[in-house]
Amino acid sequence: MSGSVEELPLAGIRVLDFSQFLAGPVCALRLGDMGAEVIKVERPGVGDACRGLVVADQKVDGDSLLFHTINRGKQSVVADLKDDDDLAAVKRLVATADVMIHNFRPGVMERIGLGHEDVRELNPRLVYGQVSGYGKSGPWSGKPGQDLLAQSRSGMVWLTGSAADAPVPMGISITDIAAGMHLAQGILAALFRRFRTGRGGLVEVSLLASAMDLQFEQFTSYLNDGHVQPVRSAVSGANVYAAAPYGIYETLDGFIAIAMTPVARLAELLSLDRLLPLADPAVAYSRRDEIKAILRDHLKTGTTETWMNLLEPAGIWCAEVLDWPSLERSGALDALDILQRIETASGREIETTACPIRFDGRVPRNAAAAPVLGADTDRNLSALRAHEEIECA
Image (cartoon, rainbow, N blue to C red; front, top):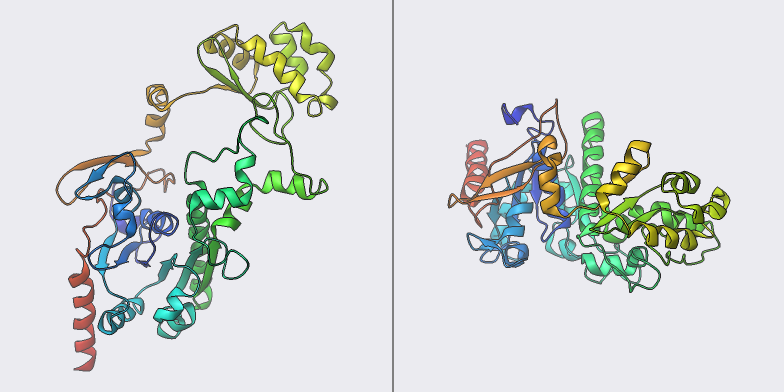
């Protein structure tokens, strides 16, 4: 984004990010994208455990590529929260902040002396955000808040795939990312309230609550259908409650997705007389497997391009199923302008995604990668000490 950082909505907001791995850092990343100053508070020597969480065997400057991706543009302050002097220094930093984020298990920050009640005395205007796996109480409150485990406990893995498939988890860390986005939403709302009232507040999210919110459409149907577990479609499963033809179908050279479409219209366009006895919308759900099986067999006889050229001009909601190289070649990402390059402390460039939100028609960008562990400790804490000395003089 051209222009100064002061043009971004959260310019002047200071965020302290005590969180690790994904959910909390994703929230802090988005706040940083919107202009906030984000300072990671990390353990001496090791820092955020995500520095060592290597995926796809990719490391940059000694840290995981994942760490650089979700901590770009942040600063790093190291502090041992079990050390009295370091804790005192961190509390001074807390007093200067607008937002504080952590994702420790329930009770950990309270034992350290940085729980919400403790921090509220230091800084009544602070917005305090925390992520847990399953909330502060209940049978799972002490269990680790990890994405795959939360997906599995939420029932989400029984929604994807077809009836004969084993449980299928999402191929992304969906509950972590959703919880991070929900936390960012809550923090923004709490900041807005603070501007009106001068009062900070506590914002809490959990992986499980976020997972259930993602499933609101399907789970609401379950709640109002006698609490009976839904059965996935036996053919081309895509949405556990969706009527035919909703699903993904194999073609001669790939796959095609077809969404909400009248079966009678498909029968007409595809010259598929076998569908006509099943064209009544009243049976599109109860007999979805029969309908989809006919479509499955027929669509295998032509290429994806053939079907797209026939269906899309007729107003049918359909799409080719692309892999990432095909997506890149499509030009759609270029049109959205959502890729960016960031530069590490050693000068190495990393290509990644940019903030998906546009402000005044522009995509906000920060060319800085994730910080070297402790790179900003002296600058941040020395500034506080100097300020205290002036006040005491």
